[in-house]
Length: 327
Image (cartoon, rainbow, N blue to C red):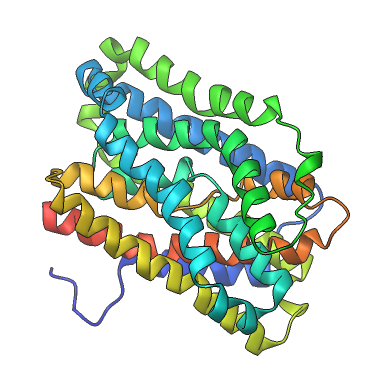
């Protein structure tokens, strides 16, 4: 039976229910550690299934797809920072100097890994290229984000504590153990697991959606427990949400137009849009604690919290629309 046009997408309904559950029953205490483990297991399973599904030729083509990676990196580390600086005359008076610095921090961050790949898979895009691009973005971001943040902070006459920056092996270790190793295991066992995955493609979809829902629940739970939404007036929160929406409203259509103008096929366009428009929360919060040591870190990461949650809510229906068009 055809879904009525007025009825929201099923994934959007699940996201709304997840957000409501996180606000009513947020996870806290030991439950946070349990949720983190469940999320890591879900991500590992997702990458194992993709490793079992993708052919080695597709993986190699994804690694060598330099034009796609160049566009994603340009959007992540050039377009976003330029937008943040160019919009300063309007953004800073709207949200204040501290939150504006937090917006610049969002603009300097690398792409997400888990949700970028999950949404690309859900939209039937180039998963291999998305995996390579998002993972490399996170690795490069360990060095580029502090440098970009220091340069932008200096440009607006604010100290971001950049002199205290230390690169950590923890992020590299997380990418390798949680993402790369399960994917390599799936590739190594593809001879045995590949046929099963091909017969049960629904598992890929369930894994994609389950990972997204776990990330959303964790993000909103953390925000609820920390009371981030109660620290500022409602008008300021709405203005900050509007700023995040503005950034997405500029970057996502622009990446779509650029992808088509440069002749990228549909699968590559999907990977470019989802990888190039996202910012990581998992790496962003630890970086903020170092870059903004001694400052109001909870307030400075609020734009990142809002942007992260908004990007998930926006990308969910977009991914499903891409999938319906492909079908």
